[in-house]
Image 1 (tube, helix red, strand yellow):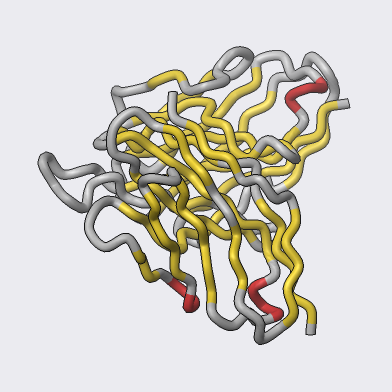
Image 2: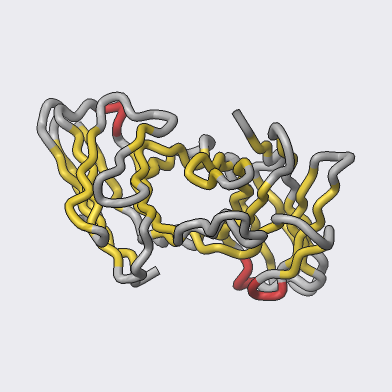
Length: 119
Length: 114
């Protein structure tokens, strides 16, 4: 989805390095997410944010941190990368859910991913 | 927490034949169910969702899914497969008004052969 842009698309780095993955969106959505994808495991949620001042841990937040610099930008950092953080990372966005709305739980829109390899 | 299972890692069908990709779920309360498709080197794309209403949900690219509460299943179907349908398919579930905690299945790779 070109409306959700991730940079870089590929990154190879060494153990112990600090890495930042960036995500920007033009969809105007309030909610942003970071996932990692591993073969045979599907996607697992790392962090999510409902708006600029809201940050929440997901299923697997240890070893990661995030920053929501603006409504349109959500970055993921690995403070000291380790090999088992080698994975495909996806940013996603979704619209806010209306209260008492039948059509709540809006679908998520994904970027094309960042393939991260840690040696 | 909610979860989904996709019992088949791989599904192979011939072009023109019907296809089914299976998904079962576990959630407390009424489920919100989704199907996404992933093409090579791309992010996931939304296909369809079930929130409430008719058990048969129609989505993008001719796909549909059937919600079965008694069997806790949400299988993805298409009457006539195309080679271009070959991709990785993910089922996902979230709890009502809480799609920040969406759980994805491990994925099923669909291969449609000419």
